[in-house]
Image (cartoon, rainbow, N blue to C red; front, side, top):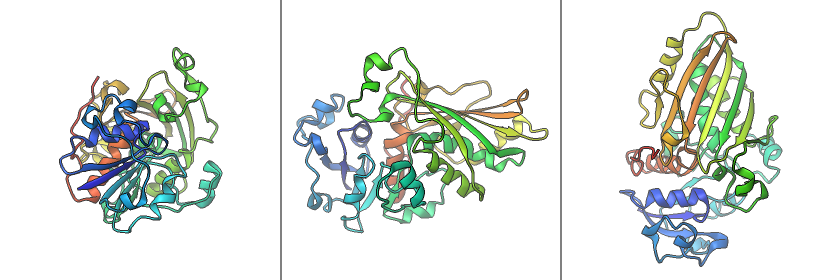
Length: 338
């Protein structure tokens, strides 16, 4: 299948290229790099020796329209301009934020840009698989993936108070993109933890609330504090919420096991095992652990993902596999590389 990667010079784009190099059904024919057009792929991503001697092309609509499947890994606001000009029979997975939010007012509040519309939201473990009859899918954000997967089973537990969900999540620096920023310099990041965009202003907040509300059948608000961690990749999210009555840990675990019993990538760990980002590094897997804080009457959920894997490129390939009617694990057989 002839495919393209647009935005291949970024971190998510590079991870797409790494995973796609060995995909049994997809063949990368077009690799567009925007401002990196003309540069050798290996000069930007030296780990990708399968692409030795190949340069990034410029973004060319005619060339893209010759493809069957296109992955867009561009900053928000960029992919919408191109996607709307493509042939309608071309399959698209957009890793940017352009089409994730249903509510135009929420988009303008959090992104302050023109609203492009909404596409089916591709969080495979939690959505109706009928969405994959569509040719265009919005890939979830990295924090949104970890937090929504971690919180979703709580909706099915009657004793859980969904009005008080608090999240603290630490992410590696690749989640902030590849552009040069002072706060991402090695001397700023090393030996340092920094909160940012807290107080309800992080752009993944409405995305998480949108999906949880859809499953719960009522509005849900979360308090979300993101943290920049001194590591390149990975997300560790801690989710807590109040519970009432005599909820047991056994029943909480049953809810998670039931929710993800058919998932190839989401795993509730054995009791007392704790998620860690290194264990999922380079993979599309999600590690979850749950606990009951009896003292504070709160359920505690810990979730680890690779922000470039399940949080971006891995999940995008999983979505593409489902759209194309091939096994969803195709090209995603890798375990973590701790």
